Length: 133
Image (cartoon, rainbow, N blue to C red):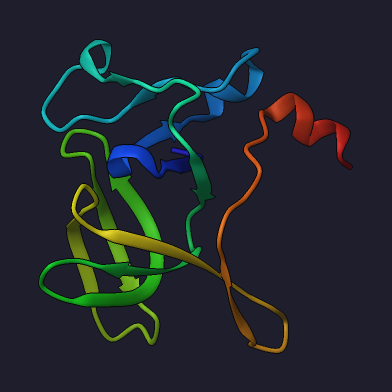
């Protein structure tokens, strides 16, 4: 999985794979736990794009049980959950973090170690990304 795109509406996510890079449009199906991809929720313009998560992005995840501040590693498309999140100091690994009832924030760390919250990003397909070089 190359990236994981998050939408505000229904707090849903959809995976972006390397094969999606060569397609004309981004994926339009949000992951639904224990369902086949054909049964996933269709994402349309009413879903407000928040940001994309890439492996090792710094995130803050507030669940009903705890607040996790760490690095996103991977997601599980079968359970529609974040498969691995590594605590920011490497002391703990969280597995199977549900996203439906969680609040997820993305952070950027600069070269000096300063951390700032990313509120939203512009959703770009890969053809738009190529022209921004």
